[in-house]
Image 1: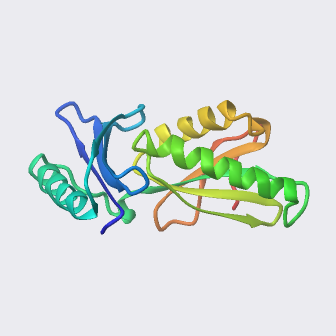
Image 2 (image 1 turned 60 degrees about the vertical axis):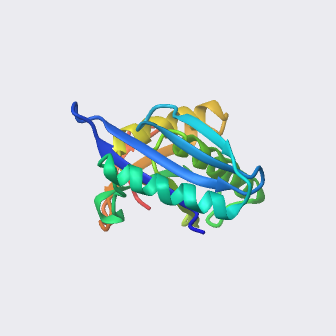
Length: 185
């Protein structure tokens, strides 16, 4: 069974909407999540007998979304937004590893419930922790990252954020704790 279906469309006013669905095996539920990108979504759960029933619901969901004009956004039409922490050591300490896990977990949930994409990966590089997020909306994602990191009390004063179109390597600085003009991975 496929993991998750995540699709988008712009409404008449140009607002980006999203819908997604998945089968939660732990609770034996078919879950649909939908709303305006950047805002807390609405979620509907339906109890299902087994994975076969969930698969049929996923298929029906995909058909309905296509009929309603929703489609996946290819990676190459999305953007990278990187949440970056300056570290005290080149490789990071055990405290930094804890920060990485805590920040990734918080961002995965925060972005997903707002249709703002995924946390793709994280890495320690040259005295920095970089958390890469793939998103359809840079500005809303930058704001969501700031809200999430502040709300989780994850050392907002050391957070910088950079963004670039998918496939590009030059990142533009979007947020910094101190005056800066560039963003380096």
